[in-house]
Image 1 (tube, one colour):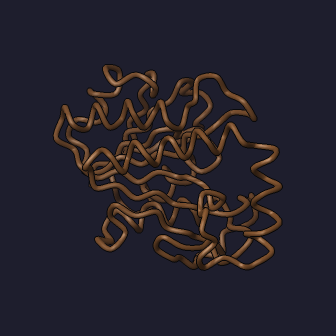
Image 2 (spheres, rainbow, N blue to C red):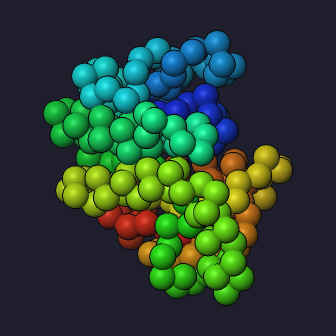
Length: 211
């Protein structure tokens, strides 16, 4: 497949690129600073462009089989609202070019119902995180709303706390529920994002994913 990866130099995005290349896909990595990616491969194209602008994204999304995005907030209060702004730009570019499949990273804290989550995670950890990172989560909620209204074939992964530990090579998932665990490695999130491209049951759903 031809894949366009947004946020390719981020903690999850870099793993997405590596996994995708290992799987034999052709990858277009959208970056602001190519030097930060640190990956070279004959099937990799690195493009410097603005992921928050639909016009800039049109050329790198055209012809893709799927778009994957790990873009999120850079801090507690990022005025650019990168998660929702980048998804809005991606949706506009996808509609213009006829690309339908997009998989993005969201957050387990957006599972407001608590279905499929441990009591402690839903009743204690989630409220504590919202108190500290409210603006970031509002941005992610806005991102998911844009996807739900887009009519595209989208999937939003909702992981718990991300770690840089060695990949376990497996994960648990729950559609419109969870995550059931409290952590997941960034590498395993990337693995799930790629896997879900070809899983019809995840289309137009948020999926809780954890180790």
